Image (tube, rainbow, N blue to C red; front, top):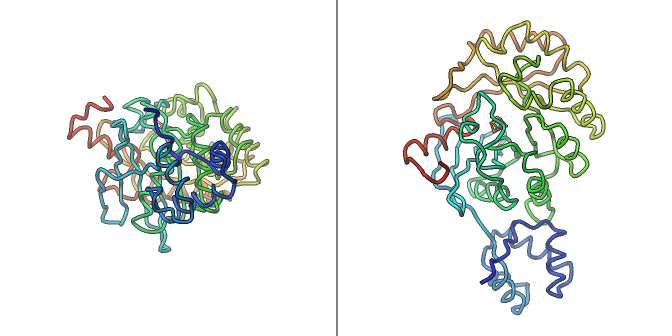
Length: 349
Ligand code: SF4
């Protein structure tokens, strides 16, 4: 039997085109999207404003996928971490971080594993298994929404979003749907390790806030931490950020994980000020979250504060992101690592 088409993979335009092949008018797409994303319906029979004939036809040809968490870990600070098992057995994570308002920020994954090999990252140790489909990306949001409202979404979990550009752009289009989840482009942030050509392609295809994982202000240290820097060194990355910011009229966020004795010196802070001078940006400092299997360590609080003060005193916008969910391993890839250890899970190797 032919495999059923997952409507969760479809943007509004895809759905209009598909329904046209069934002889259906364009407005049906909006009706279906409201059922799927606002009413959380997964059974076509429940779509009462759609004709019985179409409902029957859709249930033969199509499906509406969902994700159910395998486990959820709750941190004392309110952060919760979801481990999802996908239909082929692969596992991914999403982290819900409570904010000061009653809404939370949700960090979602875009690939299972990751090919980028960043030295400080647990996900990197498993290598890349596969790209997530648009449906698998969107379904992380749908599943966690059951636990309360989500104000902002960050693509900062497992995987490099721009290494899965087509599905990520489709997922963003779906997240933005007025008749669906209704996330405006300003409420979604995509974080990249610095795939320069894809960054420039992204801005042609869709609007989204851009965060760049920087972590060092010179090529020597950055290449040690992030192999992608050998392909796209700072002399290419920073001009691409300037272009992205200028053309999208956005401020770029640079993520900077402070690692003890590696990139946390004041001389590095000085280089950072100079490097980022041409970019309209803010710097988000994060103290390294220590985990098993790494020799890197977290800097002490005084070092972190001195690094931040150096940037602030020179007129930069520099925030310090609190390490949330440390008691549940809420840094990227860590829960999955623990699960695999415990279960000796053969699915992903
Ligand atoms: S930090 Fe991000 S880009 Fe780098 S290896 Fe980990 S998941 Fe991939």
